[in-house]
Image (cartoon, rainbow over all chains, first blue to last red; front, side):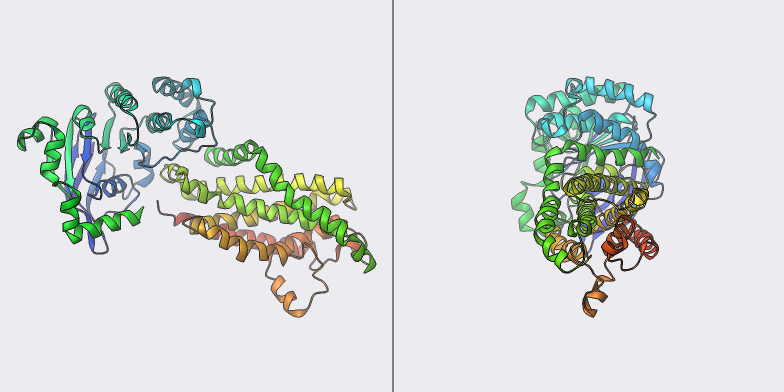
Length: 261
Length: 252
């Protein structure tokens, strides 16, 4: 469903993503993990037509996102790291607008919005302005919106950031349910290792723009002799801040990443 | 078409939902109309130009439409801040369509606001000379709305944050307003001001409204409705292209 070959992106002197290759199969939940500034968001941006790669090839469901922008956009849904809802409109209206933007026929959209809002437990609040929603509700609405046009792939960029464990558990249960029912491929990033361990079928760990390990959670733990994924992650990427600031190039890269936003 | 409609509708919904803002934004025009209208009225009459309220009302209506249209266009900055812009920019829809929906919506909001102020003006004593010409006067209001909604979109796309907003207000919007002849006739100003004001699009809009809504004696017409209309259409096309161009350059 997703094929990436020798993907590279250079910003000036910094190589944010360096010669990255991987594949994600249909219906798979694939987690992309890495420390801050490792190149996760840059990769997602390239996969979702928002950034041109410097070199390398991408196919999403057989489409090249650098060439067939609109066709590719129709085939995936995305939940951004930062919120992207209209607070002045109601939850229902936000979804309705999305349906029009993604050319979902009116009748289909109506049923689909109802199904999704019920699944994500937002139906009772459908006529409430989004600015009055709680953080967890906003997040669920965004994920429901990502599923609305029945995409083949759903990108989730740190969807559970800032949510309490209850909301996180519930959210992943709902995502898993839709993944199984509709065979949607899910590509996610997160900083919560336990989540990745539980939810993802396969995991890639990226650091300094390169993939350092890829496989099922069990395989990764086995290869690094770790009992938890967090331990494996730290073995592979170092103890984070100390190692990164010791390397001036890494510090600069982080700096560059910060300013790009 | 559906996309343009739903984005247009969104602007209207946001407008109708912020009643407080709607009423607050009537405050300024009301102040100009009443304080200046009744304050400078006697002086204006003594100078032999007739009723100042008559002369002032189209100017204040033009001002309202100018502010409202520019702000709607710059609503893009808020959408960027709150992230909603991304949702529209990653959709499988050409940017030109998105820009068209937003700009039309912004212009429509400005027209609504202009109509409200027109009603207030009539309550304050403003009387169009010929009812038959009122639609033509309104057409000028529509053109002002489109010109400045497009300009607002162009500026909103180019600015990255809120800091630029104050700059735009002080160095662009306020000069456009004060140099448009909204408050004083431009027929009798000196050479320098004459040449500066000739580049102010709002001057043509207000001149067009005056030449259609007022009697010849009251209106102090400068260019006449034909020139006004032609210039406004030209500027509208220019600003719309500018808006479309700078909107297409937005990076997320």
